Length: 133
Image 1 (cartoon, rainbow, N blue to C red):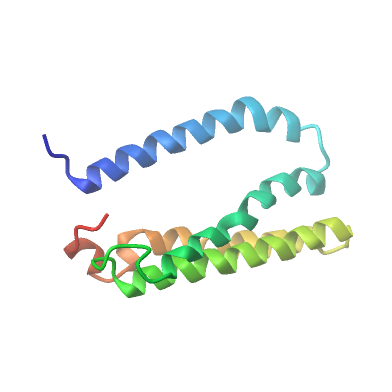
Image 2: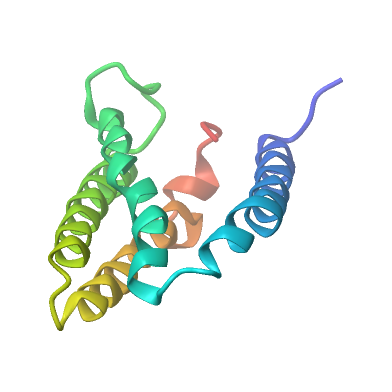
C-alpha cells in the first residue's frame, strides 16, 4: 500500500496540530491565563528560541539531494532568524522595559514569514515537481 507523500504529511501535520492545541488548552492556558501579559509571554516565546535546530537543514547531507537549495535556505535561515528574534524578545521581557510587548510583536510578525516559506506555494515550482516531502 502506498500513500501519496503530500497526503501523509498533511495527516501527520493535522494530528500534531490537534495534539498541540489540546495540550495548550488543557495544560498551558489554565496556567498562563492567571499571569500578567508580559509574564505569560515568556514561556510562549521560550519555545521559539530553540528553532535554531532548524538551521541544521543547511548542513551538507542533512537532507536528500532532491530538496531544493532555495527551500533549505529559506527554512534554515528563517528558523535561525526567528530564534534570534525570540531571544531578543525574551531579553526585552526580562528587562521589563516599556517596549517589551512591542518587541514581542516584532518577533511574532517577523516569524510569520517562516511558516509561509514551508508552504510549497512560496517555493516556486520546486515543491510541486519534487517528491521529497
